[in-house]
Length: 417
Image (cartoon, rainbow, N blue to C red; front, side, top):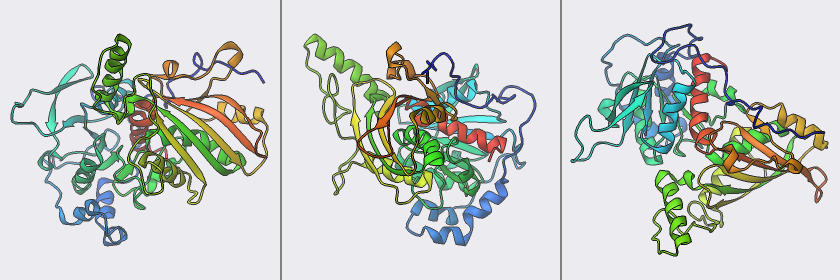
């Protein structure tokens, strides 16, 4: 079967753009399935709260009273009031760009950052969105009101604090941190994989870890067609996964090494310039890192296979952007490689780039800035009866974070679940 270069063929990997955005009028998509009143009732219910007694962030929802809205009327559910938490960070700023590019329909939008310091004056921080300047508001309890959907790109501890604030005033939080991912009451969603999980939310929806997301997008069609017996993955994760400052440190330190200068690294445990570091996150008692632990358990939850054998090794590499992964899958049922290629090629969110003879293969350089998960080097693992090996690359800031969160919001608004 001829392998094709999908870089020219693949689009942006998202549904057709909505006809509205925050500054345009037009046709309205169907409403959000659950009204804000129903969401609030579900989240505050005694049964729900009793299921997770050990998670303080959810317990606080029961005791915190919703802040009285300055606008007593409910917003149009087809044009929700949007908030971006962590709007000035690497992922938050990309979320803002994607909302404009994808013409996301909304009645209003607000942007939030860390509370101002003593030296910061009101109005100092602004964000340009769709040609207009908006203030960056401090992310404090008293400012969280009149929000239907909030997308949060914040540290875990901040996400735990703000979740009850959003839910108590009737909104939905799409959380990109790890704070809520493994809670039984919170769906962990990749729209191409398990959109049906959205109907079970009670005000909080989690977006997976970046390295998990690109792998599971590829595993889902294999699961449906052949079943999954075992998964082994090695990741090659870019500096941008550690934030903007870490990304800049890679560039600065590489220049210093090439010039023969000394450089004091701050954001990585080991110098990353012209180097690798086979440890992302803290080391657990079993020898695995927290990043590897996330990949194992998030994969099982998203796919709905609690005991799926998954072995992960996560490595930081001196690449500016895009995570790459070598994935080995053992299936329950036999397959042909042509079947696998066709399966990947017909799957939503995947672009096959697999022509080594013509030097068409996925690399970080040619996948950055794209929303698809790119797959190549598809071949049989001859060491087992039903084994597949492939290589995949994805922009960790886009599909691994910002794009996935925006796609979840689109699903909510367009009632596609």
